[in-house]
Length: 263
Image (cartoon, rainbow, N blue to C red; front, side, top):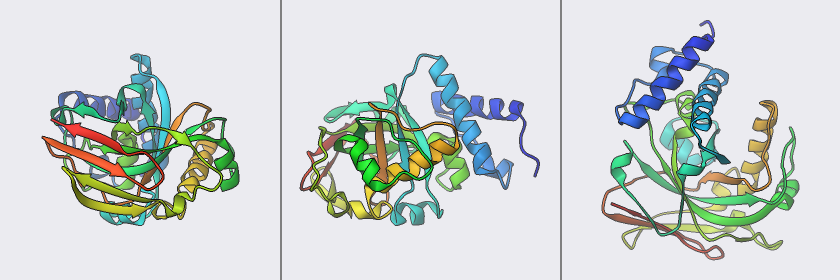
């Protein structure tokens, strides 16, 4: 199939923005264009983000998505994707969010980072990634889809900003040299009942490898991770439906808990 032209990219970006603002889903892009390439999907994502930035939003970070086997199996894909974090998406722990502002929201617990220095390059090592990290914290990512269902491909997800809708950040702490993030066990509870668990190693063997993967992907696109940005490493468990009148909490042995209230 021929690659879409700039007009198709712009029209698709507009359709996604309208779907989000009006909360009326559209058909998955790969239904209309089977074989849609990941490169084209990232072009759509870039066009959506550019519109958001032009409207006053600020870029505050990035997310690596579908980095665990649990999420890959749930989504029916075998590779990771990435999206951007904009300022209006970020909530602090204890915040209350109206479920009605989203469409088909789900939630997942993740290990996340705030960078103290730039991280860029084709082959960044995990040691370089660790040195670049200023703070580490637990996060709850609320994912959503602007498509008619969650039966989507990785290309659809990429075009839709890797399905990112909101991010709840927990208290940030320094990444100590002896902290083993791969062994960190996250426990997710809803209204006080544990419903999911996962270790940091579920994310590419070590959450720091999400930073190395993301640095490489952004480098190939002409960018990189920047000091001060926050980065989500990806869920350690399969995503959970986000219901009204509920409280979602994630905790782990060495990182402060993070909580979201939903009304």
